[in-house]
Amino acid sequence: MVSLLILFPQYPLSPFPNPLFSSGISVADECISTYHDLKLKKAHKFVIFKINDSRTQIVLDKVSSSEDYQDFINDLPTDDCRFAVYDFSYEVEGAGTRHKLCFYSWSPDTAKVRPKMLYASSKDAIRKRLDGINNEIQCTDLDEVSHKSVLEKVSRSSH
Image (cartoon, rainbow, N blue to C red; front, side, top):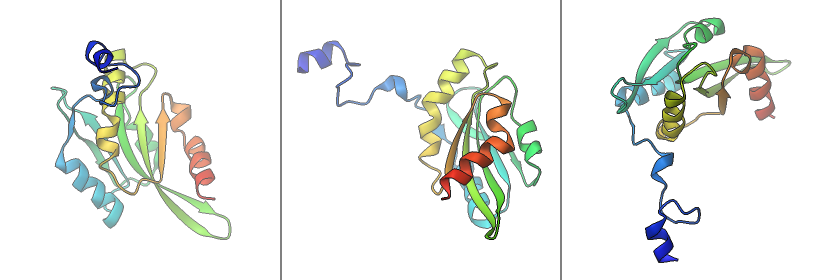
């Protein structure tokens, strides 16, 4: 078995981490502090993150206090990937307003393959640093990121 691991380091039963599943990209400290401002201080409604041009770090792309969900959707690029956190609020009949912190992994169908792979292999780096996320939304088109679609997902998880 040891010789198989040396010859085939990607052997599926290997106890060693598979480097193909991790990009090695770090998360900028300002991403975490801005997220905590959103989560704890309600200073923002949403934060969008991107991988920098040198492909070494996840950095802030956009921070907004706009209450309009459509503004959030409009800030997602149509041809490139992003990560985002949105403080999603909705009404529950007889129970008032609920808030759910949603982590979005935006990978539109129109994005090129290389960024899709890079974002997929970098997602865990940022996701593990964001404590208190209630829902994770994988979205590849506008239907999957629509208010209606996200509302269905978050309301299912709150029961």
